[in-house]
Image (tube, rainbow, N blue to C red; front, side, top):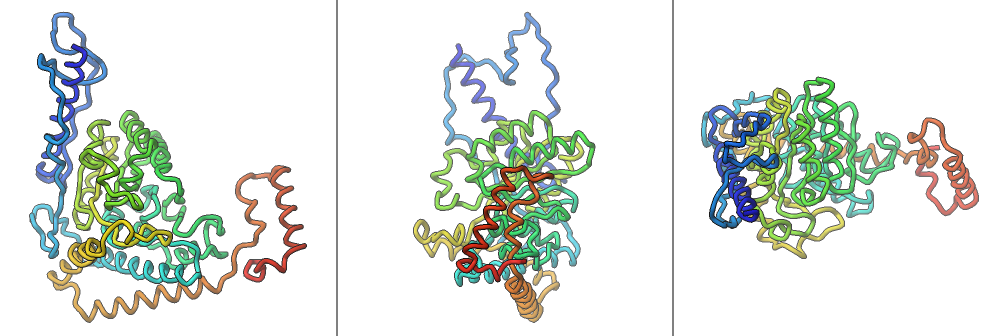
Length: 445
């Protein structure tokens, strides 16, 4: 009987998931999100009732031993608004964004693309130590950022520079961070692309995968307790979703009923590990219902689908104090980082397909052209202007000195402990003795 009960639970869970998957897209006017189930009331026990009374799950008894095969469960569908030619598929799902906002989406994506190309090449020339591009994933960044309030707190992974770009983070600060110069808000202590900005409500990036997930849940719980009327959004990749912190974060968010959006960029690869080796189930969105989290899968290369899903998730997360999981299906066109050569694990033809046939920037450009809001002359002028803006910030950052080495020891303790002061003095003596071996003229005095 114990085995039968276990089978019943699995059967019930998977059946519910399949129904939820259909509801994700079919509820009218919901921007693709499923209707919330009523909160479960405290169970009333009756000795005359032959229904299961176990507190751990909602299920029915069955009298046939049956294991559920994962391959018989239909996959969660992918919500989209535009096709690959930029045409609206279902007019009722058109977000009807004004021209100015759509142009900001497009310019944020293309400006990010331009910055990526210049900084990637600067690393190859030895000007900066490291870089990570965002090629192919720009739609997941700006589509979600546009749907948030500016005060919503962002916990990123390391490939969400477009969120900051949409929030008008200055190019000078992007460059300062990558160069680690005196204008860097982190004072040169972080790796390149590990941005953070208090004014833009963007928490500083942490390199270890998935550490931001439970931290984001804690911030969302605090916002709920403070009645802050804001949401926390936490970005991560499908590889990070395999970390233990992800599962702990999902469970805490659900049980504590936190206003948080878990935003998974499923770009096909966790560095060099393809999704076929990363998991055997139906992606990341399928995990949400098991935790009691409202979930949806969207076309991450469709900026309007990302916008609609994030906007509705934000509205309901704040109004209902519950978490949401968005899995944005996309593709990482660039290498994982400047330390990676992706030709070792994928073909050039595969990359070219996504770059030429299904790029989020191209799709939105098609939409703008069809609306008469953009033309080839404007495209050429903007490309030239955006490159000029990036190069000006680049040259400015390169001229600025690095922070004073003494700043390595500041901003941790209000009063520096004796052991840390001893280390600071040791560094000062070392530089005084062997200063000719270091490029101290590159550092602020």
